[in-house]
Image 1 (cartoon, rainbow, N blue to C red):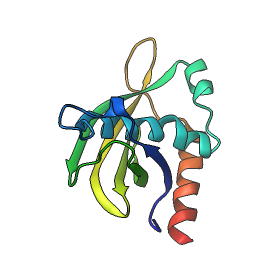
Image 2 (image 1 turned 180 degrees about the vertical axis):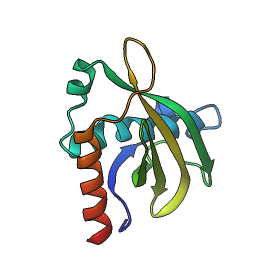
Image 3 (image 1 turned 180 degrees about the horizontal axis):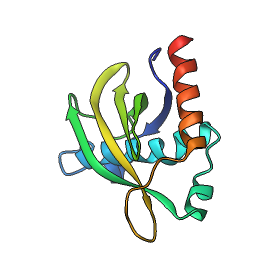
Image 4 (image 1 turned 30 degrees about the vertical axis):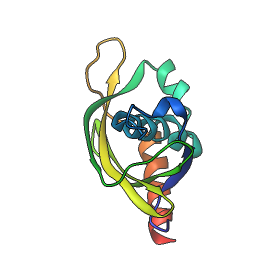
Length: 142
């Protein structure tokens, strides 16, 4: 996908499905969350462990997904991060999930950076913002 900032394929396993034999809806969210943090950040050279060592963490403040089509056992779902909005203490990560080129779900997750001890919001670290903004700029210009 040309507009993708980052993508990862996921093969649907038996435990991802429910009694209807389709992927249970929360698994789309789980997959998206697992590539947003830390797979995407790792690819940008952002070591999530170094943030944890600084007592920083990201908590999910909001999730919104629209489901378009089902996926089934052994399907391959391509999960794409399509955009990122960086705020002062939060970031919104947008994404789309495709099966064989067909959109199956799309949505967003809002993460808030918090001090792990106080659980209060703190500014997104400068190096994190710089690497993220540079990657987004490169992908959108290229």
